[in-house]
Image (cartoon, rainbow, N blue to C red):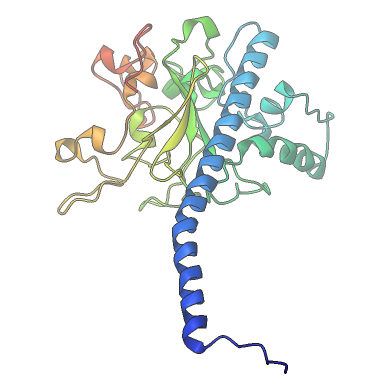
Length: 295
């Protein structure tokens, strides 16, 4: 005599569904953590390749650092553009190339500028994001070209520098903030360059920590470290973005960085009529050769 196969009861089915739900709840955090770790590694790999680009630039251009900006002709002369980073990696654009051709070349470079954990918006006029921000103390056209309108404001610290003159502990670039292009109450833009610590933290918030509260940072010795680049500190009665928190919030609570990893001694020169120079009063706030990183 044949017996009909026994079907699951509703209770048994609910038990199975419950067990599956529990297993998913256990596995998802682990998978999420593994995914983020993979993103961190990908971001670190980008920075290592960008470090290689700075070495190649110095080899081609008489030992000088790759500048944050090498010309005033357009965005292609910014550090991530076709005329700087592009040339380091052999991305060629013919003289007089169309905007479309420049765009194609720039998109090839953009693969090294994409941090998979950063939701930064696309750069205006270009169909990609620049997920990293670069230290303008390593050089910029505004500090090098006397005919530039901003030369007087930048020449004390942003002139082109020989690679051998920059200490190993200087910050080269770091993860950028994820809130580009507009975030300041005054309508200013987050940028792909910085010159002092406050521009990464409380003043402009250009530095970001997209990797679960931390960010990757490339230093001049070629090391890449995952550190607290900038975290907003929420504390009743204090303002942390756009206003200097002063002594209300210890610096160590919102960043592991310090000015001496960023600012060249030129920031100690007499103040120019520009907030960009942000005069520093203590020589210890500027580059110090041989000083060990605190992490």
